[in-house]
Length: 300
Image (cartoon, rainbow, N blue to C red; front, side, top):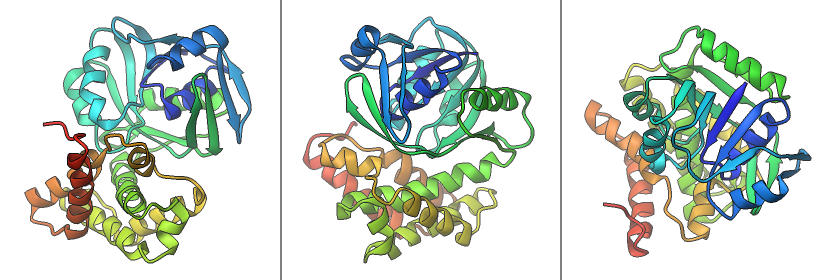
């Protein structure tokens, strides 16, 4: 299968690199990472040890592939969609945080799939990423139900040695992922704790309540996600990635813009529209936005 990975940072490089063991892969990202991959290949170390030589580009316009994986930060979704719209793809699948797929649907003619990836990864240096935890990739139709396109994508992941689940309940899984993001990202960033201590320590109830609020919002929009399932998902991911820093903690630690709008904004905006209370997510979001504003990182 021909695969293009748009947004080849840590996660995109890991997934794209693993796929490159079996498929024809093009990574789209930034220099010096892409330049190093062009010159010396991509090295994945840690829980897996792989060296591959995918194509590496800094311009993702006017490309074509069977599958495009979108792994940019959520706030770069519109830019990714504009670039992908200049090319030709059978399917496009988001592995991003937040609920970004609808924005891809609005811009693209390709079939847009929902997806999640539970691998742990960190960017080590240009040309190298470190896998900190082996997980799985889940893909499925955005609206739920069976999808022959998702089945082909899942088979392609399996062929490359990536454990893949083709799911028919992606609406629920999307909000479950959002609950995990809401439960772990903000609390860990604010408390400066790795994922495990975030749930084990004093901030744990804040994390669990953020997950419950996300579940209530999901039910308000017609998605069947119970509070217990949402909290259990947060606890499971925190335990499985206990020594890892969340992406938002990494962003805060490195003085970068966060995905606060895609995570907490997604919860609060829907809560407001449907008359649901989400004070914990609102507070976490406000604190993170305040940190960004003080450092000139807010856009608009």
